[in-house]
Image 1 (cartoon, rainbow, N blue to C red):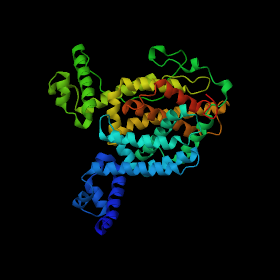
Image 2 (spheres, rainbow, N blue to C red):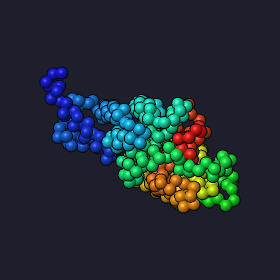
Image 3 (tube, rainbow, N blue to C red):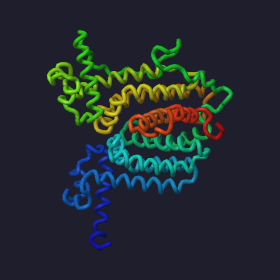
Image 4 (cartoon, rainbow, N blue to C red):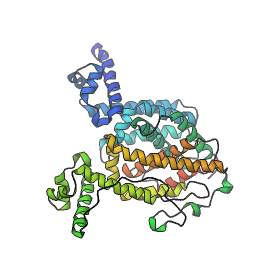
Length: 413
């Protein structure tokens, strides 16, 4: 290595560090090269001597994250330490984590980088799981994704930073579950309750006490309502193809077969259409998670399968929403509110189980409530937004999550 190249190493590392911090604060799109160079005290031209652009910066940050995580996991002694180390690595690379979730979309180079990173971490993490080989793959994926979403939630401000508490409770769940008394675990038939509105059983109630955002009402006339719905459907297709940022009113009007003026007759702009679609999806989530407790227990498996169903129905919208969560604070507000209500409902249910003696009193109810919320979020995101894990059925994943909470993995399945 030449002396000149050696002299450039500190500058290169400083640029990478500044990019990591900027992306942690603003996301990939919001992290400007001017801000990165200003933080280092160099010109943009100097940055280009080391990196051809922000994409190259991101690619190297992903490589550094992977190297740090795998090396750290290799030094772990036991599952609890592996969880803490993986979570610590993700928090240390918060900017890279936010950028991964912002940029990873099917068919992109970014999602390929994300997949390679995840594969290496799952392999390193799985070595610390005290479970048979046939269970290791699905459980290691579930746990790695859950902890990565935890780091994202902390970085994005969706939840408070109590990483050590979450990791400790998660390790306890893997060992023994939340509901460890097998004699009082309800039969599978009682857990697999119906989740569609017309199948709701008498005496059940909405699991999430959450009032969805109010969307703009459609026209009253039959013809106007039909056009209004066609514009919404067209916007959804355009959002799926181009994302919200890349979609124009002209794109929507062409797909809907109407003029741009017709689009603006019903909506102020594309963001207004998105808010209308968002309100519909929120209402659907609340309606479909209309689940009772089962003898004081959370309906673990049924809730997750219900989430799979509702996400698949609104998959294009949720892809756009996930994109915006990393870029716009106002887009995250409904998500944060709904998420907080879900965690609160879970926490209350867990505390009830502890009070009546069927849930592990040694677990922190609020931490376990957040763990289950993170579990649902990460599993649904991985399978439906990213399109990964096609080798695992919904049933197999849901059964793994159910076992995490009922019985744990310290005893045979």
